[in-house]
Length: 341
Ligand SMILES: Nc1nc2c(c(=O)[nH]1)N[C@H]1C(S)=C(S)[C@@H](COP(=O)(O)O)O[C@H]1N2
Ligand SMILES: [Mo]
Image (cartoon, rainbow, N blue to C red; front, side, top):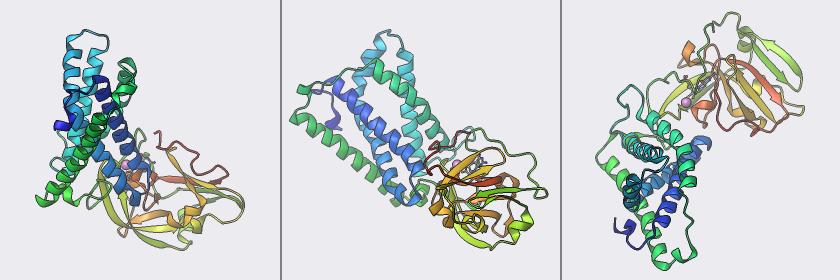
């Protein structure tokens, strides 16, 4: 890619550009987990194009890497590790999105490696940028530089389009992936977010649900739940680890469970394990407390006896083994953007 040639462009400029596109790629990657599913297409395209822009800038980084390797500076190997992780993230991203390799050697999804590489490289990147920072100067910003920057952006966009076209024309598995990048499969895959554990005992007998709303507190058993109006919902659970599954879920809509009225801006749904997510009260109509999937009672790993179904939200919102539903005054954004367990 001629546009990314180093000649004439000071190293500090190439370095800063690389930092900028890496940050865009990381933020868009994380952002795609946070936005609702319909908005994920645009974010995923930005993520992919920024990743390819990193590739377009590799050539201006090469001489920097070469001279860096010759100098025995502190942190030299941390910088090398940062480079290796960046390449691993790029490679796993391309392999997953084309579908050339969806399962990596070692039994994890390629997407798992993509996320792991991305997460580990964040602290390394921040340290590296701080330790090696050279501030770009005003005189760097000339017409030729702008042309080159435009060239990198164009190359990244063209690269993204080319990859997508090849994937479709060649009928690679990636052609069938969802806008989120996930692959549809027949059944949901039992998935733990970080370090939660499947509860040892989740038998339906003795299961109790605590409901706290504007009218006070009550405890429901499965029979009480069965006496409420039932609703069937066809919805796709889409995990950030790269799989998705469309199922027929059946259970009780939260707005039929939680009595309206009283103050309260959000509802916290908590698992017996302590894992929890907070939702806006306006969204209760679209949330289902499900005890059945595909006409069968839920399996233990999939959240039995009762789990949340949150259509349009990524899998980590679909709280399993629900123990309580509580209306609170706090706004719905009052929680860590991602679960911490
Ligand atoms: N209590 C609890 N609920 C949870 C999780 C968890 O770790 N603990 N993982 C979430 C994630 S990341 C996903 S993708 C879905 C997976 O649902 P499944 O195991 O039925 O496929 O459950 C969500 N609900
Ligand atoms: Mo997930």
